[in-house]
Length: 125
Image (cartoon, rainbow, N blue to C red):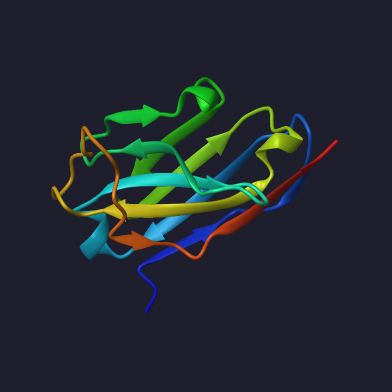
């Protein structure tokens, strides 16, 4: 049984918007700081946004203003909404859960206890 499953990856045109989803098992969702990571082709996986169980969010500087992370507690689902997509956003997007602190996000570094399988986003001109 997979603990985190992402949905919503697609091939889109520049300028479009997209929302990715990640459904978590209830056991994980209720105890986790959740985050989205991106891995562009040939690059390392990088954290871009995180959200604590109380809704507090953090973003990598280069995505602020264009990416929005949110969670729906009734559906055990994490979201990432991306506006104004451009080819530089082409990547595999992963959701992850850090359950070390039972909900809050670490002030130091996110350490994933669980990973999703990834969902691919391709943006063309």
